[in-house]
Length: 412
Ligand SMILES: *Cc1c(COP(=O)(O)O)cnc(C)c1O
Ligand SMILES: [Zn+2]
Picture 1 (cartoon, rainbow, N blue to C red):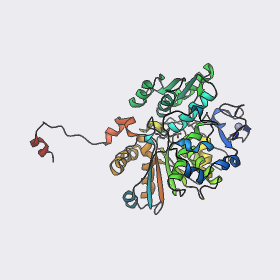
Picture 2: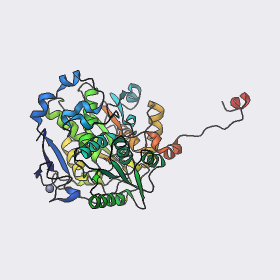
Picture 3: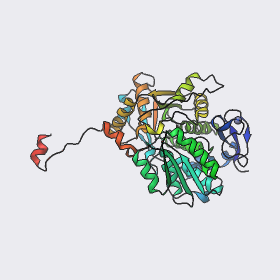
Picture 4: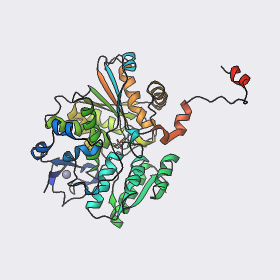
């Protein structure tokens, strides 16, 4: 059966055929039983290496198709996803004692977030499986991304977001034609409702973690970063963490490149959580190399995309970052908001709060002298226009004037 060898449970290690299990390990349940996609890496290596990539003119994440869980190109959407730019900022690097500072701007995806990498895969999977309806619970981006990618298909999209989701993200959902349920409750509550509805009505569920193919899409940011830096990845990669799927994907991407002999050493992946929403960082500190302890919390942070008190990919995130040799750190909301303005002013890249969190984390470690002389990259996972209310709090004020030159002079 193609290049996928099995779907393996992250907790008990039992392996399933993709035709037998749709979401999670029946023995370990939806929370601990998330599945990893295991490929036949020998088969992959036959048609996938640095040389084949160098010849490939495709400038989307589908250049990594041999390492993605899709068997043929039939359902690939026309929207360009991935192959987002990596920028280098030498002056900023020097200023913070780094050898190099890179920003990968995933705000440039079709719906303006990193989530497009996963949605594009899941929308294909839904069509391969002949589903009629796709659903997701989301803090905002996963949903708007799913709605955008299913727009040009015959799939119907049902979305559950917390009532507090930012206006721009809800507008995206509606304009793409999704049916939107604004749930009177937190994201964690909306998540459980979407799962119940998916089971009840037979919808295909794209909510974080339960669907094993999400992490596959999410790993492509790592594949790209390595390739775009000529297979010489940085020492550190910083990324914002909510449910833990993006950070897991990035770890898996680098691990697979190493397994295929395409990079020599793994970059250390640093998952950055907001202080008021850091259950994965807490679990990581307690991790003994065997059991991941799960303590859900009531989450609160200005960074809506990573405001997750009941992270669904916590087991994978902790295990993968541990295996990677990386770490989790936390930053305050003040640090996140300051980082939005600093990044925009110093680089021209305008991140949403969750996209600025990894920059806040980098600044924190740099100021503690922990990454001096190193090469570091930041994954900007969402565009700043997605949440202008928060950005306005740190943007400064415009000057209101009468339409005269004298008025201009007065304010110079
Ligand atoms: C979803 C998201 C994240 C975090 O991803 P998780 O898989 O939930 O950890 C970070 N930044 C942005 C902008 C996101 O939308
Ligand atoms: Zn299991």
